[in-house]
Image (cartoon, rainbow, N blue to C red; front, side):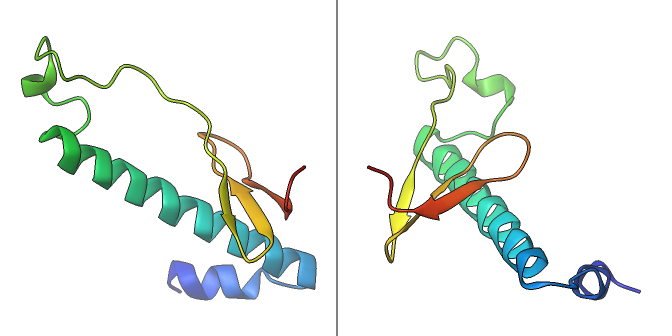
Length: 87
């Protein structure tokens, strides 16, 4: 069984579906942000050519993505935080 079929079988409730969708969006956004940074800097994360270049990755910061009245805060571990538009 492939992983998509396994994930689909694990969905039993609306909350399960919502959690899965949140995780998929989080993974997609984090991958896109990483690819954008690779393109912007001109080298992949942990690549030797980035060391001592003066144009290095020097940390990370939290991000909040807004859309359709909802928000998503992707993170490095755990579930993405989702909800209504924060105050």
